[in-house]
Image 1 (cartoon, rainbow, N blue to C red):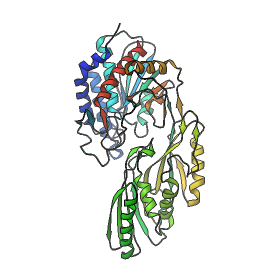
Image 2 (image 1 turned 180 degrees about the vertical axis):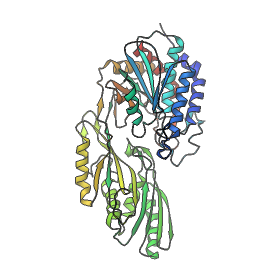
Image 3 (image 1 turned 120 degrees about the vertical axis):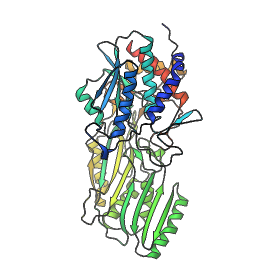
Image 4 (image 1 turned 90 degrees about the horizontal axis):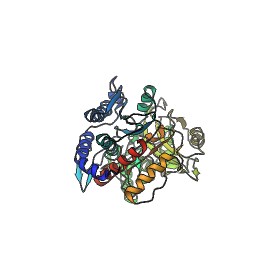
Length: 474
């Protein structure tokens, strides 16, 4: 049987786009201060999960909601289950948008909204691939289960809970990365560098904040401090304008007598590619490191400036490593927080470093290495409990071979394996990969302002997903 998958997608592209637009309108950022018994990550992720599951109910699939943590949309029969993993939660929209991030706009054949490329757009493309197979009544030998998550951008507690109650599929993919395929993912762990909250210098740092999430390059940073005199404050103002002029940042500074407040603007990016962004937190620290702060404030500023600024590969921290297949370790300084506290507590004063590491590196080794480097600055290091080990599915696995063959037939381009620093739900399965929906040469706007997905890529991905899902499950 020959199926014209492109024709089938074409017949449904208006429905696909309308469903996606409605889904993108749901502000599904995690909000811990709004967690309830029926909204484990806040109302937004729950509402987006319910919205997606409602599509499955509308279209006649078997649907299960696992206590608003996650759920699935399923059909087919067989002893094996093909899993498709998408997520409905998004990172915070942040600043710098030209349009409302939760009021989707189509311009120049692109759809702009938070989640359009990560991961609501790709998820909808994969869902429609599954929907086409069902509507055509094609014979299957396996179950197809679309698992819908709601905490992928934070701690993956959704999948922890889901798999406490449901069995894992036997193999599968996540539509949450790039074509031709992602069959390897680096390890992922976050370390916190902690400092005392005291001030013992001529300048008094009151507060310093930057970043929204560990896995985002901070696009803005703010610091408030007291200079020794009004004259010093005015001198800092002039120096700041010179600094901004000489560096790839913008910003504002306000002085009132000795009080100084600075806001510096860089460029946000996905934490898996920190070199693609301009880290406002470290650029602000470099500027402040010229002044006579003291105590924990000085340690905080100097560590950020001396060991973290533009250290995308952990070289200054003494933990650089490169694997022949998986490539270099990368490091993103995603969160900065300092709040003056003369009692000396370190709870409010930290820099969060998110590492994506290859085989040959361990989370324990990273912790020891960073502690060795920053310990001399009076800092202590802690490790997040959540650690994802490096993941790899061999290129000769039938799953990888099939997915690459489908990609090649529909694009005319040669398929090849890829290993990334980003973490996807594909790594949940021993035989799990990430597959699209971004094509080679795409503009990466994930975790950035003005996130978008090309409509051509959206529909072409749906064609590939339909064919791939059917080949894997028939």
